Image 1 (tube, rainbow, N blue to C red):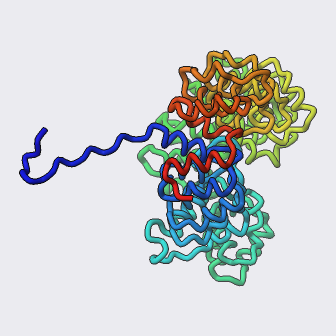
Image 2: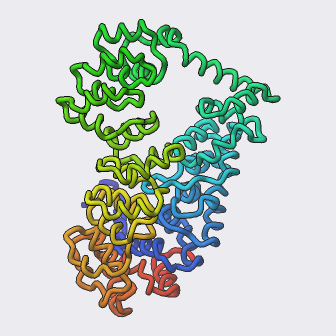
Image 3: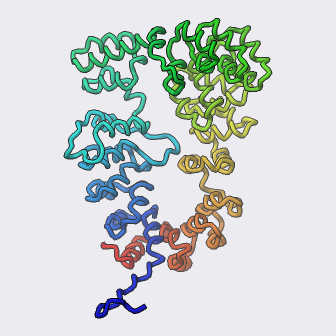
Length: 517
């Protein structure tokens, strides 16, 4: 179409995008045997589009780590700060980074929450928790916001929290109190903190002691209890002592009865009345209580509602409240995220998990299977459990799970595959029988088997890009075929990631793409 501005030439169209550019860059960034000098070239702005693949989605050799940490671009350092594949101590070197967003990414940890989160080193945690807010450095997030990121990231180990009451830094002693640890302290530790030589620590201890004392006062709860129902009212009624007046009002109005049935401090006579409530959720909460008597438990074990009967029968007496909480969380509310919750109660209930492994109840055996410190003998018992859910829970959580069982879980539980792929006992060989599997993720796993009798040539034309990429990355492919695959956009990414591609060829590809060397 002619230009409507006489005398000005028609602008030239943009040159067509190179269809091999991004596949080559992504493949080289993921190449498991790429030497440091190749990977460092990808840190150039000309390869910006694969910085996330390179810095966040794989492990890196030390020389590349050094280059990443010194990189002038925030995006590079932020990606590395979130990398779950590198040693947390290497990520921790960013704790003094001049950019607050980089420090926030370090504190927040990996964006992929699959598997077990590795904690940051103690000295890194201390530096993040004690950092002063500097407006010149904290231009995007404050030091307090970075602390909140760290708290939510699960990167602070329980061992670190336990050392806080005696920490040499008074700021961290105060933090330990204010982060909800007062009730977990011994009476001797509480007394020491109340008499701490540092006034900030004493003030935090006095506030915590006052709050704890107030939380034990039913009349204080009654005065604070909001009239309107909501999360705050429900939380108070589930966890704090309730006065007789509050109990009677709830019973008379017929509201918050579940919260009363859950509250371990609800008077026994009120619990007996709640056991006959028309709502089966209320009766189930009573059936779960650790202080329930044998007669009432026997009555609820014959309840007309299946959930109430199950809740009463699954957990024999004597019980603990911690066991009640694990069961509530892991079986009756949200079993899929049970692992971290089980770990939090493991120290005080380790013997119970062993008992659960031998229980006739599948739910209890499933809980035991998520306990990663379960001894070898009961773990072996669960590996042969008749229930697939129990076996697969063990495969996902226990380090002694047999490789064949982990593979079986990979086949059966697609939603857990990102986690299972990170486990060392997931088989990577002997997978030839899965090359024709109907699930593309399974075919991709099989295509990466380096012990196969022949290269996975037939999967190079698979309809799924994931499978084609895995097949093209197989080191069993002959060099002449690999050269062809590099020139085909459908297989170029996998071919560029192929371990059989030597460093000199990787440099040639980057030269063709104009990435400086």
